[in-house]
Length: 319
Image 1 (spheres, rainbow, N blue to C red):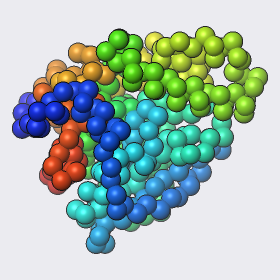
Image 2: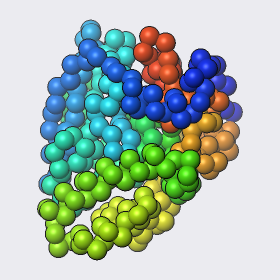
Image 3: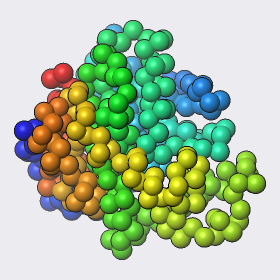
């Protein structure tokens, strides 16, 4: 019954979910990490940019890091993870999803919560070109959903993959979207929408015949964006079809490598369906930790080491 008790008790200001979320996303700074970029050319003619950082000592261990919606491999939750992992004898490969590395991707499609084919391409590339014997997966928010979907949807998981840690995971995408549409999250949803529409404008220049001005003007909410672009660009009927087919919740019972979901109880992005108590109770490989505090990708920690970074290292060391 891997329902994991949590000992995360931050100081007073960080017990507020919004304060924790905003501090981590806006004010936290991570310095002293050196990354080297590699371009991975994909079978469909597109590309991913991978930002590598190395352990202080030679190692056979690698962590693949996946960011969240409209993030990238330079977000401080990614660089903080990579820096901490490097100090503890892990190399890190931080993936920039399609269109997230500072350069538009080449195809009409982009990234989304269920695009496990891109994670498979990264893992295949690593196994074919590197000599790691232990590979771990760590993902935040959208990236966490993608990892859990990959592990449970029936893919052949390479023996080198030992464990996974995911943080602030929207296990039910419709439930998470419903939360983001509420007034409590209006500032977050407005920021996401601004960035997404900016990228859609670039897509319009690349593919003017596929994105009309009328369609863009009709996008009022994040769900509208998923109806107008995410779903249609990636082969789904509409936003709800996309949410239903790409939510990792339905795949959690099939996960068979040690996996941890770390979702704060006061995460305003997550509704009740995003906390898979039942699945963790009945799948011995799935561990669920629900601290009272942490916000969305928050989890402040001492010495600029977040609780999620320390917790991931602890979990990886056991496997």
